[in-house]
Length: 110
Image 1 (tube, rainbow, N blue to C red):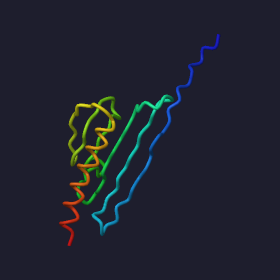
Image 2 (cartoon, rainbow, N blue to C red):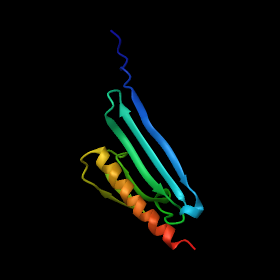
Image 3 (cartoon, one colour):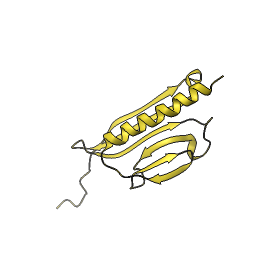
């Protein structure tokens, strides 16, 4: 009998980085989603990184992830647990929240 463990296939569904030009407010958007072989999301990380706004938490101004075994939100160096319903809801919330931050930053640029 073969005692080797069957390998579980995980697929990286999204691994994308968007650089925001300095004249547009600066920063980086990072999207990472990993799924199992059936397409179920098992790991995600959504982040807005801008070292000009936040030097803590590797420059992460805003982020949502489940990388430590629980769903949580990062904001300006602080972390808090969140209630998770669906990934789509978290992604929409992240998108709305980072866009509000981005608009404030653009308005304050000289």
